[in-house]
Image (tube, rainbow, N blue to C red; front, side, top):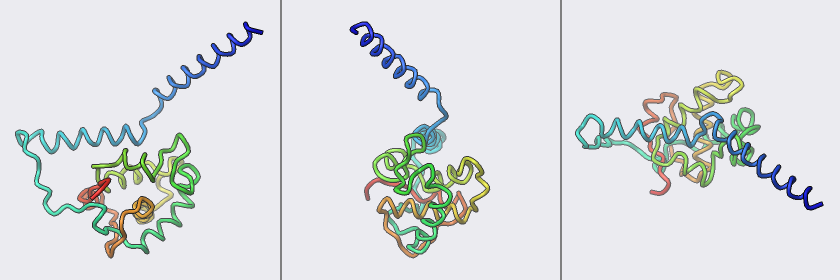
Length: 174
């Protein structure tokens, strides 16, 4: 009986170690993608200007009401059909698909831009067929994500142009 317990324990430890190794080898997560974007931004901001940061030049944040309530409502409907299967109805993810709401989302996307988030969704979501959701629907989904993260709605509407959305910074707190 003791031998069975010891071998069972060793099997559990081995499986846990293999699972950890598999997790390390899986494709880049949102956190990895966000980290790459931060590095790219640091090089862009400091690399060519001799340590001087670029001036913000009228940039907005998610606290400036950059989407409308109507756009977020349209995004909720699009999210339900295109995203909820993996990310869940509550946007909290399923363990493989990252959370799009709450602490995990803000940790992954804080100090990045709405354009970065939109571009990630635009080129890769849903993973089965990214072209099945229009850029307009994806902008609406981003508005829904912002709304679910308690960022204020305003009169603006998120565009489908990544360059314009890159001027809107995701900040944890204002």
